Length: 476
Image 1 (cartoon, rainbow, N blue to C red):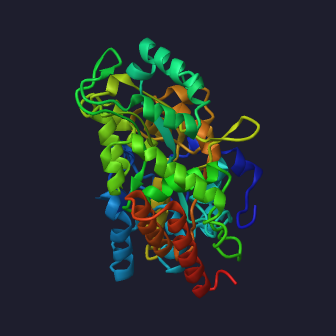
Image 2 (cartoon, helix red, strand yellow):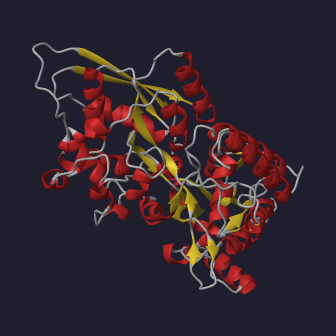
Image 3 (spheres, rainbow, N blue to C red):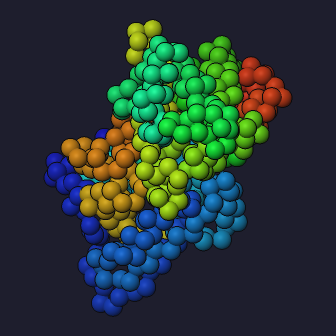
């Protein structure tokens, strides 16, 4: 593989055996090494901090302390970008979204790791153990290259959360079958046959007025059938709209090409897919039409028992099954998200990848780099990754873990995550990603709130992308 010197011996080392450093012998006297890490504030990173505090011991003998700065998701990019551009050099590691790679690599902030990987068979084994989709999308820059900058802190994808007391209710199943001539999905294999059209049927079927019959009881309040991301903040609408575009056979601008975005992002296929995205919102709670339905809003609506099924990230599923946080903890199950049915009857479930790699910054000295890479190896070891899946609300992209025969049983949402990982794609990694994303989110929000049509939104996005990309010299 270009850029890496793999050996047969290195390939034989599994991530499960990697628990410590491979750089230096223990120093004559232990030192205090503090690793400050910026990370989004949610269960997968909270678990990492707690597990580090419980179990981590540096093999160098140093007293290593990991201090995570937990930042709310809606302001995560802005906070990190402000820190990096200020020159304050606050963080030694950062949990980064993959699309930030171009901006912060080109800006000189993220450390290229190839020479450290080349020198360390244990890190080579980690790379060899990573699922290919994570190497392509989350760890390399340029996109799909072998220039490595990160390792997966948490891989994520979108799955269906649904109420078993409703979808498995005999009366509801009979009524749905009578109306739509299809099974109301209760079992995992039934959800594997759900496309976006049936998702709309589910939305219509379970949208009920307060006091209406619902399952074996009545709706305490107005009740809604479905919900998915439709939020103006960060990349919330984009993640869902890109997914439905790809599902329909459309595409976004390809950063490996020099062709314009016009005619791609605003193609007829894409317009139709976005129109379906907008149309299905009518079966969602009213907040959907305000541009505020982000990943945490829909999570909360579901946990409060106000919606029958949602599509959301695995990363927010942990609290859903916590009876202290969720009214539906004992009546929730998980399945693959819907997709678009193709002419041969199969379903395309291409989806915008979630989750984040963690990276090292360029201003660290050798000792901090070596200790930080040892933290990476500890986190990606099989025992820690297994505990993360079983207890920490997370998932793993390490093949030695993901391919374990028991993986699908380790959490209620592990099977759906594992089945989905093959479908994952990513948005742009180029340095211009944030203005592209911001303008696109603004236009999508105008369409969601009824100010413009799907075609007007995508035409505006195409024009802006062409202008921005041409000024950057990325298209002819």
